[in-house]
Length: 198
Length: 95
Image (cartoon, rainbow over all chains, first blue to last red; front, side, top):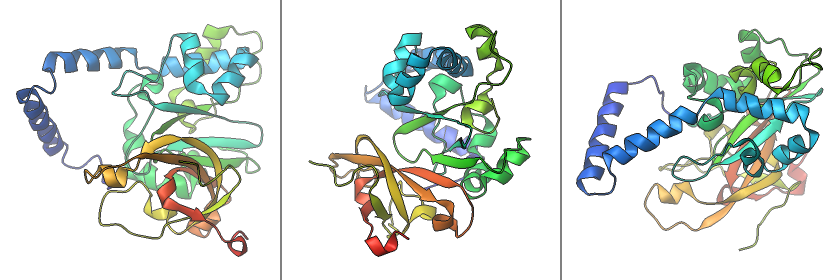
């Protein structure tokens, strides 16, 4: 079912609290354990992680190749992982090139690599973005102020199963002298989703 | 269990509109695309959501031309699809 997130949020929250209470009652989860796990996960989840990955890939050709081949295996090189939830999620990093641009969406709900990008922006969960970006990505990018060269092919990745996606943007011109930290500062969350150039 | 499909294979998605949860989005039903890669093996959510036994099965990244999905557009859309959603596309359908 692909409903609208902005619906009766209070009802959903109440349902979640009720479920949590039942799970606790039956001894299936411990509320303190749950809080600790959530806090620890969210404390580490940030778009700075994704930016760090991108900066390293721009600087280190070997890391870039390993990241594109098997992102889950490459992330620990930077002390990162896709674990932290109930099970480790598969990450697929998709690289923008001169001729091909990638955009990420989850049309069914709002799947998103939270560990690397932090909590997702509200627009990412909106029905407008989810329904329109698969159909007319160029128009959606224009609304983000991103005028992509018409010659560049767009591929939209719909995270409809267990994989999560992150875009590896193209390194901006004139950044040859920047170090990893300075390069990471150039990378935006929207760039990692594909609705901005970097 | 051996994989039914390999990268490069042309596949067609199911047209069935099930009365239960599924992860085959409506816009991608009855469409022909190309297998990009195998992502791993996961139990079919259509069965898990109904609390039925579900063995892990291959999930593939499958790429579709926008024109095939929407009748217009020059981009492509890649979805993650369980093997159960796919059948081999007939050769005459690949054009």
